[in-house]
Length: 318
Image 1 (cartoon, rainbow, N blue to C red):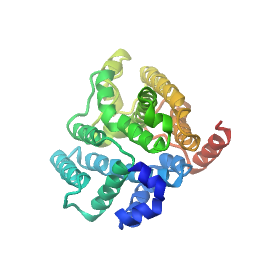
Image 2 (image 1 turned 60 degrees about the vertical axis):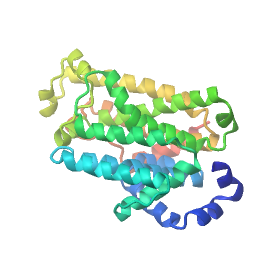
Image 3 (image 1 turned 30 degrees about the horizontal axis):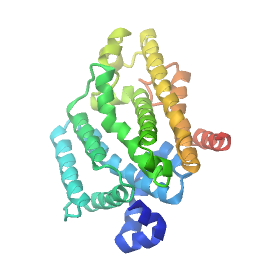
């Protein structure tokens, strides 16, 4: 499908096979622009067809995630019901069957179906993601980092894997050398985990207060003698600072592994991913500069900081 897409041109193929594409794409773009500001900035530096596919995938991820975050604490059954309706509709949409779902959701699923088939993205990735969303509705503690990694495969790693299929669609080596493809996907998985760990560290206070969740492994809390009561009361102890320094070092190692994979991407795609990576990693710097306090306030970059960081990253990428 990707070969047809590039041989005849994006607009001709889409107009022929998918008459609702432009309106569905516009809706997906509005979702990423509203919720995924750091990713949105990096996305703007991609090629047009890659950028559009990224907008669509972001919306595909965002809606089920929003179901869980909105309803998890007080209405878990409603969250699970919404995810099941979404998944049933998605499975039908993917194979070309009629499906019933609300209009906004239908726009996202139609667009996602187009992206999955255009870029030969394995359907299993979508199921791993939705499995993680169901887990989010049912589980709010992780005993070990290994257990957290298993969750992050579906919640974050598959995002990197899907994006790699899009960004490398015209990469001859990626599509002809299985060992090389395996390496590139491995690095993308590490970068996806780095993004997710950054989210976890940024949102410790918010996740606990609003959703009753603690993503930091229980074994790490015990190792550094940090109690849930201290998290609930937003007490930044010396032990909590040591805990966050440890988790940030772990996340930095994931970024480092992901960096070696960014260099394997086609150059224009690599620049866009690099900008998103730099923007996201800056959140860790904000946490450090706040004396590791991610309990009392959600640390994030200002609009000015985002713009300056993106411009510097664009100029210095080689």
